[in-house]
Length: 370
Image (cartoon, rainbow, N blue to C red):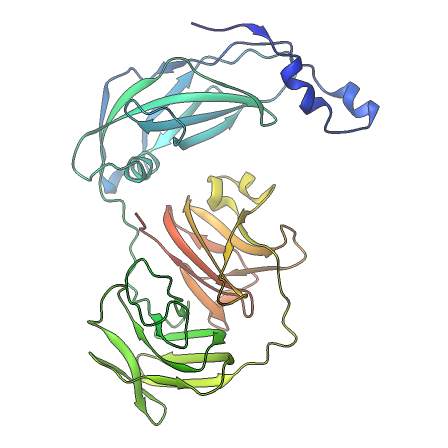
């Protein structure tokens, strides 16, 4: 069933965005709406997804046009939720403008299913709806939904790297190695993945590193005379005076440096965000607001974000503006002179834990998060 009704009052807020009378007069008046409704594929369709077919089209979703007044751009969002979900936590499969159909790739359907809780290799039911809007306002969601069965694969992004996390009395998180405790990771070189670096605040005290949160099985520590060791019960690094330091080590040469860093001239930012085509899967992801990151309460120059991203590119910027921005040329990680540049960071579709350091533009993007 389609609902047709007057919604002039609901759209008044959109018309009042500008105080310029000419602008208001040129804006379309939304007179009536009927919801879009899904027409294809048929409900109860089953999809068995394979990684080798990831870049292929799995199906084309088609819906009827939403009815607004003439001369407006209608934006459509294809939503997917668990079977019998209420769509309050639905995920976006795709977005379009003035188009009532969209081709979905195998890898996109697979990633959405995995993020909604599908177990790889086990057929899982999901509901799909379509939502329309005009300039982000007057949202209408289809009354009907289709139910699909998705047999997903793991969808893991190849990631053959070791991440090292600081642990100890001198660093964020203390000596608690619990997986849920906040630990600052080292930023890995994008060109040379054997080199790690972190510039930030340290308390007076000792620290070492672990490669698996919640486990002491693999440690990296101080072997003395500028050398590191990787073993159980590794030695500790010592900070005699609290302050900012740059800590660097090389897991091939087994060497390290730990030197003071002058933070006096560094800028303090109220907001750091991430944006780019990897946010939406289209170049439109470079427009509008970025996705805000969370600053560490321990270190005012390190930021983090958990986010699902598409194939594409991205970068970081300060204060939701282009005055100050940081990027890179290497996937997953980089720091100044080793992958971090003014370029756009390549991103593969996955759910990420993202870390960023505004002191030197270091970034670490760990994929395959649950």
